[in-house]
Amino acid sequence: MSPLTNGVSSANGQVSRPLRPGIYAPIPTFFLPESEDLDLPSFETHIARTATAGVGPLIAGSMGEALHLSHAERATLIRTARKTLDGVGLTHIPLVVGTGAGSTRETIELCKEAAEAGADYAIAVISGYFAGVLGGHKAGLKAYWTEIAEKSPIPVMIYNYPAACGGIDLDSDIISELAVECPNLCGVKLTCGNVGKLTRVADIVSGSDFASKFPRKNKNAPFLVLGGYVDFVVPSTYANGHGAITGLANVAPHASVKLFELSVASLNDASLLPEAQRFQGILARADFTIAKASIAGTKYLLEKLYGYGGVPRKPLPPISSDAGQALWDHPHTQDLIKLERELSGKVKAR
Image (cartoon, rainbow, N blue to C red; front, side):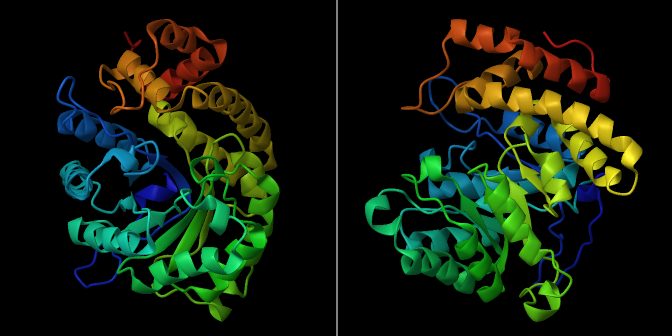
């Protein structure tokens, strides 16, 4: 059983769906051709597909083109996702929602709106527009997440993504200090891909005395250290990490979850480590290849595999047909698809 399939429900005002180690996917936002309005049926189908495989959904993240969404559209997606999960019997699976915006004020506003729409957790990236000022301003960086955590009605995760933030890259000291000082912070997503940073932060927050010395505001929201790619789940597990939030889980949810489960199980049964390493190799190669095609490439693969995906919202361009076919035909992609089909038991995709 996946760690994401064991939760509780509660009618009180606290988080009723615990945040657990595992695999999460930043869910794409699908758009109707021509109008670019939200394609909610495809969104619902994809939420159900990934969640039933054991993948936790992250709504309105980078893969979800949050920058292209209005506040109202974000709320619609959250409500739709919650309704979809509940409709397929996955009432225990939490919703993590991207709330990062250009200002601290708007980010807090988005956190409040997300909570009202049904989000359980928020994840906030800092804007890179003023990276020239903020990048080397430790106090300013800490103040951003500190204030958000203080004022958000739901726990907040730090999102460290230098490529989307003008190069702003939080070091392990800043992240660790925030974890200690902000009881409403529930983790960090490291899309910087820095395994050493993950090791240093995980060593602090996974210590036996961290929870007692620095208790979280909500007991169901521990501080998780999550990779931003699936290509280092095995080493992350052995460094006391907690899984990953990975775009690849949209394409291969069963394989991504199985990799995490094998990695965790191998801690107690060393005979499973070779199989975990085999999975890691296949997924790491696919992650390297598919990530370079970005959002458009992932949507292309979903279209090929499942019949939905479409293209990004303008001005983000679609992938060309030649580049898309090359991505599909790439041996790294095909190895991943073969593994996913073996695990899911599904017939050959079109």
